[in-house]
Image 1 (cartoon, helix red, strand yellow):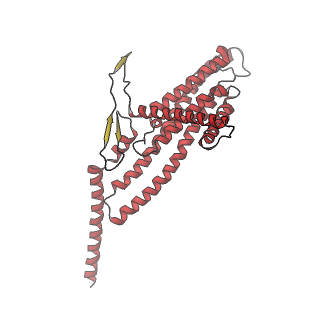
Image 2 (cartoon, rainbow, N blue to C red):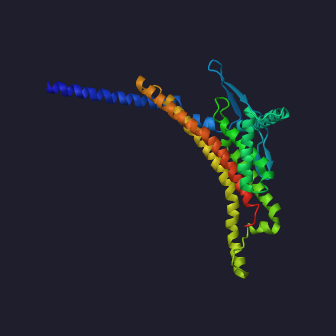
Image 3 (cartoon, rainbow, N blue to C red):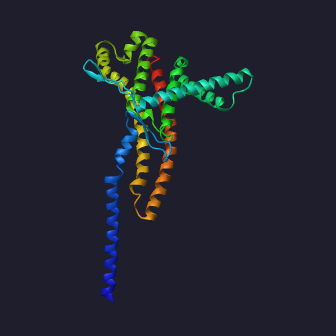
Length: 322
């Protein structure tokens, strides 16, 4: 009896080992020959010259090939101005921002013409705009903040719409703000605004002091040497600000999309597991993705706010003497 019992135990262990090995083998096979999760993530987050439309499962996948222009060679550099997927959606976001603001303006004009208080969508957008103007632009730039308010509001709403666009269902789930070139262009725009406005406000002498600072209490040769020694640090500080703006926005939006796609990929990657196991993975992954999507919605607003806030702070720092 003891030998038979041991034999049964050994057979059971071998059967469990074989089953586990089969599950691992099937998962590896599917990863190698079925779903390439890395390729799927890169395909959905990277820029391209095509736009894929797949509105319904019953309809075939439609691919729009964007026009390709010839390369332009300037000073040894090769430049191609062909529109890409992110460029198309960036234009779409700009049109949406313009349409929302135009519609809000018309609604407010009609309501006030009838001597009615703003209500509904118009009231919500008006409160949003006033918050950006008063609490972000003017509060951080100072008395001159009103003239910079349109720029700050444009940056805020453009980035907000771009971030939220990436959370839409296909084929609208393309976020221009997840492209480093887009965030870098916005950061460069802020950089030139900061420096040019500072030069105009402070004058040539005052602006040079932002590069060659005068240390309080030092005079003569020591002050000159210290000013020259501090100049490289001040210049690096000017360049780090737009770099931080660009990388922060790009990194946050790209990371969120990668995490969501990676979690979704787990459902398909382990879809051939035993019945109970695949359901457990699917339910758990769906719950995690839902939570992260809610977090990404918050991050979309937060990153637009941070970009607009830091832009206003940088502009405000250059409007006053050190």
